Image 1 (cartoon, one colour):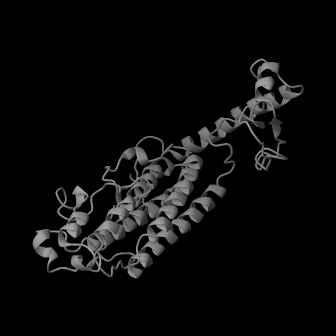
Image 2 (tube, helix red, strand yellow):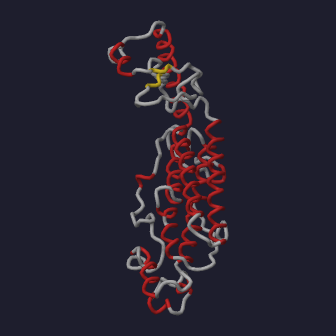
Image 3 (cartoon, one colour):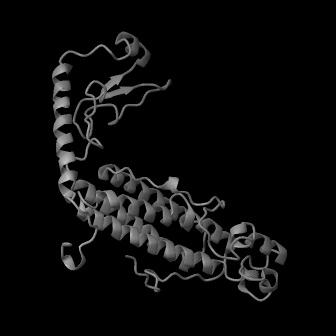
Length: 314
């Protein structure tokens, strides 16, 4: 159940109209890394988390709802930046603040052209935000990543928050309006806060590596193939020990020769059989644990999503 409160979470303000920046800001309204995408992603992920991870369900729904609040802030800011565009623009332009956007450096027709350059601000919406990105491409559900495995979903969310934070950073460079920058700074900071929340939630699910249930095949986990010609670079991604498993990296200097020598990676190393049997055992054990974890959380017989007043349905 959603309950709308008319006051914004953060009081969005603008100093003056700026149709051009309003167009850019659409990226966070209906773009791939925008607030609607984040809200729908976390909202979708919450369903699969409800039974096995009710605490994470609560978190996902809270953050999803906050993202809807941020969508409202972005939409309100866009609308205020379009002041004077709505209605009969040519008549309103002489009387509105739009004429001062470029400090008199452009003629009336040029300013109107800038304001109307995207049809969603004129022909299609009469001067209001639509669910498109800054290029007018409609919002698409393919932006959403929801895999039904919470460890995978949380990692997707960490990446999503990182991308959104970066977009707000870039947007702040394209406006001189102190009020708009203040709003963007708030939204950017909340991306960082959500990043921390998802990191913390991921750490409470153990084991959470590798993603999913099946372990990685020990024959192929630690090879680093030097597949680019030229000067080679060594670092913690191909030298020393792997950061999570602690296994030693196997740097394959000559991948072509190595593939030929091992007959397409089919020849097994000595001592690998024991590790493969251990992996197979872990696969079976973890499969039972994960399956039981989900099944045991699901109620027998009639299913009910909510218990009103904390009472079971009789």
